[in-house]
Image (cartoon, rainbow, N blue to C red):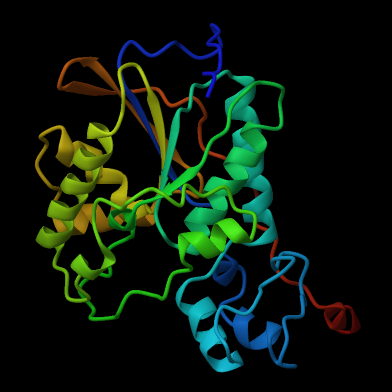
Length: 281
């Protein structure tokens, strides 16, 4: 792979660089009942333009497929579009990306795929593949819920998603307990970042697409203490979609946060309105 040439638009990395990005807008945030409404005829029907264009069966029968989509939702139309725009902007800024690591959650995989699509839409020679890392999945808050049945990397690749099917996850999903405590989650966060950094070569840059709960993971990796749970929850709830943070290695083993290439993607709320309301005016 030929590395993207760096310009003054975004400073060239002095050492290794990590860009952590939250996934885009989830379809279940648009309508929590989207699965029941979309599959009520036995096949997927798009009833709202912000619903995904397609939602193929993920199991042999409708019931299990609906369970899978409910437990592991993908992006809304806006989520797909804005993720692609982020990729295009990263490309225009000549932001170096050599590897893409991603949570196995569908919303993260779709975000990473759209970012790559936008990043590679401008003329330069890159061929990025998504490396699915189970350890990047979010914390279940110790509620005892089992992990969703994620789509296998091979099936994602067969469907056209740019997946590195040869990548072996550093942390197995079997090692993520439904009863995982906050302390357990912090240990996992440290371990997954440690594993990712060890795979990076000198002056390389990795994009990590994950969930809001993982945004403190790199602070733990560089030796900072975990936040108390209340403060941590507040920060998680305030993390916007597609928000990114960036860390750079200034000298071997020493990392510091730097200004991310793109700020928060802001857009206004656009709620539902029924024409029947006009009759009441």
